[in-house]
Image (cartoon, rainbow, N blue to C red; front, side, top):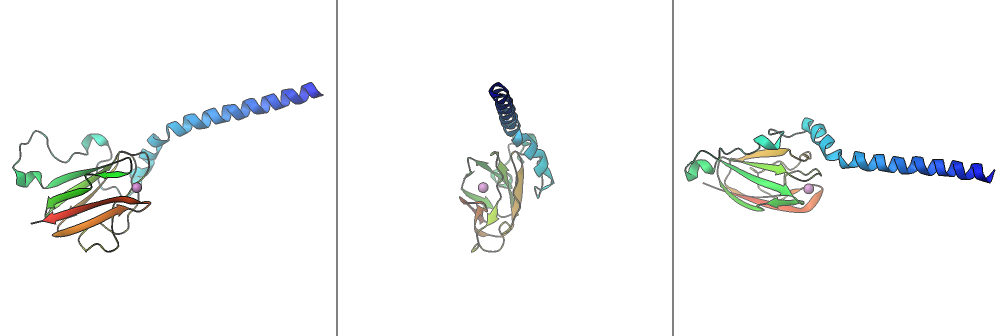
Length: 156
Ligand code: CO
């Protein structure tokens, strides 16, 4: 009877350990699954990292043209660069390099003309773009991570 109990307990433990191992493996590949799952979100363009850079690196454009697009990278829950100055009409693209979802929303007291004040999260490898057509200073943050803060200053 005792032997049977030990065998049963051993079998239960083996199944439990196996389940944990499977769970760890599934967890480790989760970011890839999230990427495809998030593609139905609000991301407006650039589903893959390969075509995220809006500037043609071969085009030696004058400063004016170079200012028409700008990028901010999100990594380690940080916007880089956090302070960005662009010309009016510039499209800024935020690309998420973290495995967790982030968003880009204007601060509550930000002036009109910046990003929306509500936005869905976008996942790893995905991007969010906004075109700044209004001169001003536009502070923004990430809804689930209020410590993530950045500012876009738009000049003529
Ligand atoms: Co965030």
